[in-house]
Image (cartoon, rainbow, N blue to C red; front, side):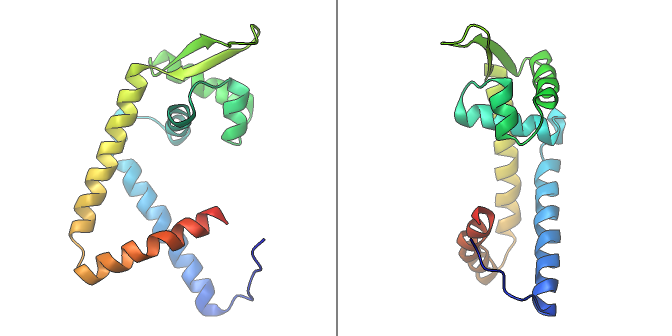
Length: 147
């Protein structure tokens, strides 16, 4: 567990600025891929299925910290778009697994390319010292996200 230091005004300001900057960066990355019109929950479900393979609605809901009913609605919309499909569970005939379709994998691939291309172009506009500072900050940002 991380011990919280007593916040001071400069740390409070840094937290506010970092929160705003990360939020703005995420919104900008999402806007680069808005042509496929997936919402954040749909995109997140596709990403998880891509990384972890076929999952039940309940397992996916638990992994995404949401109610199974909400995940069911997300999966229904993704299935209607042809981005996920149903598969029988290998050991439990009462359950159904949802898996990424070839079209779903292609949507994921295109989203990844759009994000990377925008970020590469944006980073290319930085001065060498700024780029080095940003690259040096990556491990710290990862550590913060994992704490």
